[in-house]
Image (cartoon, rainbow, N blue to C red; front, top):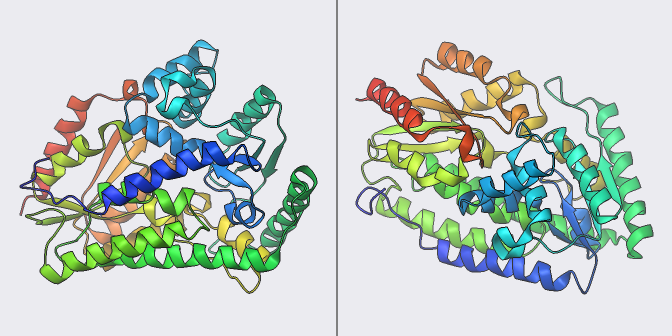
Length: 402
């Protein structure tokens, strides 16, 4: 995409420095206090409150994808006997375990313990069991029931809450660190502040023209994941919000000539993030909403923190039934003035991709908007052909042309 058609965020420089500091700090701090590898759906606020450092192999996988080294790391994992049909985040992570020199920063610092939650997918269970066996470190698995109704039943929340209390005791026994409820509330306050800012930033995209586009949101979502519960996440989002508000005040859109407003579903195609979106941008299309970055806008009840965490991490987007997802997408169509929707049928993330054809039919029938399904992968470039993506995007955009 060219500078003429797209406005780049100035705050991205601050984000790059912040994330570089995060990874450098995690490597240093892992020598000073316990370090956990965690899944993106794990209640990291508990770890932060107990002074346990954390890193996210999934975020590292996205970084590897964006730097276009994920496919090579996937092949390293496959050479060790892991199937190409597995999630590319898992294969990237496992490949970096065997060949850390092939990844950014020569891999992640070694873990002292592992925390996994199956509220995002079942793959993490076996993935983290392998890591536990390979590194010889303990693993705690948080088992979260799938939400088959409009709201999770009380017994499901109680079940997860009991496990969180078990997790705290497990951590205390293995790290000799105690849970301080006052500190937990302070951590949750930072988490909720970041979530509130993130919601406000995303809601600014309701304005025409939208100050941000989906690739902006995909890049700037990193702190809401890896720095959740720290003061650094709200620090960055206050800065990003000021920049977005300035664009709104000046009526400057992320896409210079915004004519079409779109909705994106699923994880980004990291190795081709900007090349894929540039095919839309040059035709005046802006992705003003998406389901993926919205999934992190979940706050926690600080008055009853353990129950609040149980509810928040049970109701993550990917752990909910299709009707719930459909209601959210239809609300986005109304609130953001959506003209069309693009579904990334992600070969790696099957829980996210299953149901997309049902969601597509619901949007077409109830919202009356055209939709497009792009078959690709979030990291592994062998799973899709750019030329085919370009052809489908062109045909879709021609059908939307005003």
